[in-house]
Amino acid sequence: MRILLTGLEDERFIRPLQLITNLFYEESELSITTLEHPDLIIHFIYSYESSVITSYAKLSEVETGAILEGTFQKDISNFDTEKELFKQIKNAVSLVYVKVLQDLTGVIQPWGLLTGVRPTKLLHKKIHAGISREDAHKQLKEDYLITEEKIELMQHIVDRQLTMVPDLYKLQNEVSIYIGIPFCPTKCAYCTFPAYAINGRQGSVNSFLGGLHYEMREMGRWLKENNIPITTVYYGGGTPTSISAEEMDMLYEEMYQSFPNVQNIREITVEAGRPDTITPEKLEVLKKWNIDRISINPQSYIQETLKAIGRHHTVEETIEKFHLARNMGMNNINMDLIIGLPGEGVEEFNYTLSETEKLMPESLTVHTLSFKRASEMTRNKDKYKVADRDEITEMMNNASAWTKDHGYVPYYLYRMKNILGNLENVGYALPGQESIYNIMIMEEQQTIIGLGCGAASKFIDPRTGKITQFANPKDPKSYNDSFMEYTEKKIKILDELFAVPSSRS
Image 1 (cartoon, rainbow, N blue to C red):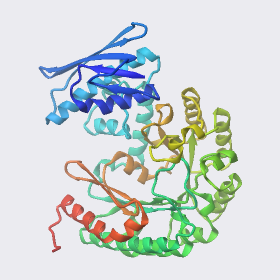
Image 2: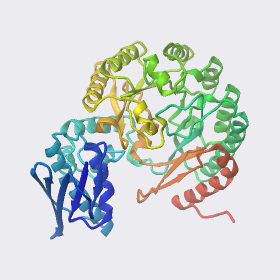
Image 3: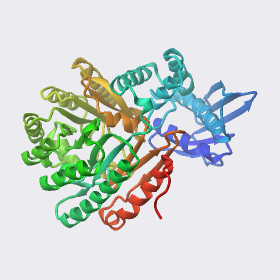
């Protein structure tokens, strides 16, 4: 689809409008200057006068001559900067763009003009500001075109989060820790996480773990010196259980020695996502250090699917390792499922749900497949055939109904670019078993410090809420060469963030 946009001179409009276009058309070309033989010409008019933003779009379909129009008006008397004003104008233009494309295609976007990752943050912000539930829902519907169904989902999630973490809005002076272990048995076709096949890389593993222990010691020292509590710790990756039981034991010992008041940390999670990495010895290590929240991720219970996406474990192994973990005292097990994996439709996904029913993990995260830019699956789309929008939507609806019928409640949600059906990833849990870390990472209420290869830190100013991103190198060699430097940089940011007087030369 070739689309010429007129009336827009500022190039900052291009990216948000391109993201919206991608929701309607798989292949598209957009221009705000010139475009030969466009399929659609859309003319925009927008203004800001007397505290009111007005936007208008007129769509002309070249082949048929059809004309469609959309309008929007909003009072935005409260804004602090020109940047904030432009953001409001950009949203107003995006809204009328969604309107005319929905009218043209007949495709209703359940998330309206939102293409961002964390829609529930919008509702949290309104609730925290004292806006009533009714008014907040009305604003989400009018300002973003979010459907009532998705607004209700957002409200259920916000309610569960505030039940599980009643002090969610008061945790700015605590931090959570993410520890990245960048190794897996193999790399999945849809994956873009820093994950390297562990076979034959023991030298890299040893060097990496040395750097990680250093980071943990230095960060723990800073937290102790400045009396900063830790809310949660999350071991991710990669697959943290790819390393040996002995290496895991030393890693958790380091955590207890380095971090302040580990006994008071609300939750420690270890991703054991690949069943082929789980052994009795590793589970004994987890028990030794009082860690009982783990993930064992089937993704699918169809063996052909697992082979196609590069997961070398069997369905039977997933079930076997789940029972092993349960029998060895793991009392809070999460499992991940993915909607829309290659070759799978409604029947296959329903079978996966029926198999999940036999295990009943404490929490279940239902992902919708996303074609991430750097993944093997995206580079070879022709090889990986996936379900269409209607099937994807039916699978998501089935997951929602299944979790409700089995006593699970939704407690966190996030979205991704190029996600199938323009849907979402939803975490469900039996009440009281919700992951606090997942809530903290999604709602961005506190700083999360990333340690390890590929780990991203998200520093949040306790006073202003301003977010600063910082990422460690993604490959083990670069990490091993520079972990001391990156640790020092993160501590410097923390000094500034928490207004700590500098004691370093």
